[in-house]
Length: 125
Image (cartoon, rainbow, N blue to C red; front, side):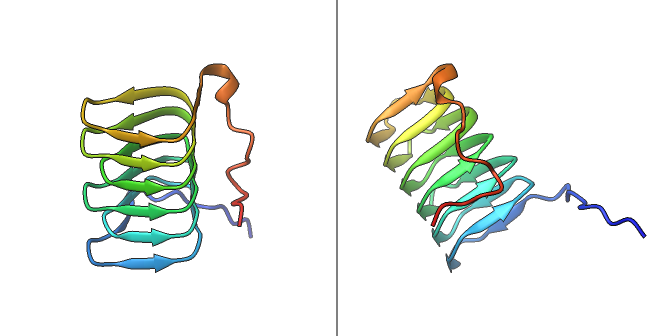
């Protein structure tokens, strides 16, 4: 019998008022409206909502940040920082979009030199 990993069409979500301590790894999209203390690795898109907070590294293909991130972001395609976003950490992204009002403290590497060097299957501890 052959088993294959089925990708869910529904996004994974951490709701408001929920706190998770630990690393998260997923193949699909992921929305964070609660708090995560740990690393997040996704082959899809990661969305940090206005009230979302991540303390740790985020590795993904696309990201939309409206809340707060305290840690490194590694985005292989597009990172969108909304006006309400607050990022304290280094960014490595192929493309970056920043709305007026967004707050960013750290270094940024963009373009072809910013391609991900960390495999999505491996989350640093």
